Image 1: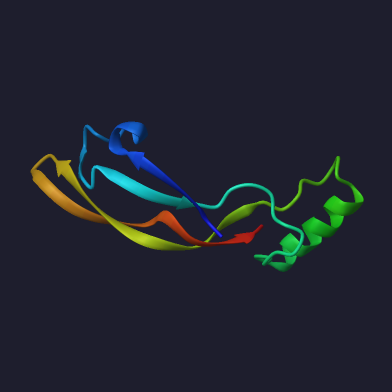
Image 2: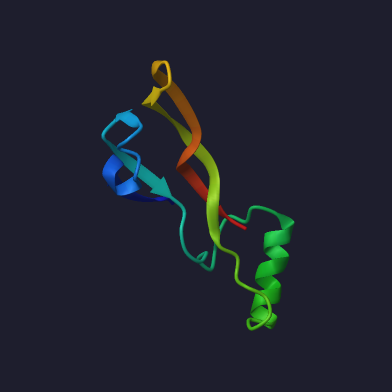
Length: 97
């Protein structure tokens, strides 16, 4: 489940080029995976097993986005103002990789 953080354009350093929205609800996938988790791949399953056997040599799987919610930003351009959709800005769901 993604964690949600509210950020302003000033927080992100985007206030000089993004006009709207002035603040964003950003969902993100963070941290280690819980004991029972949705694995992204067979690779992640093997990584978890190897981490259990050799935690000093193999890092644990971590939480990463599996899908995103598109966000439209209004921003300045050389010729005026434009709307642009960012398809990979806000995490909708997470899995472990």
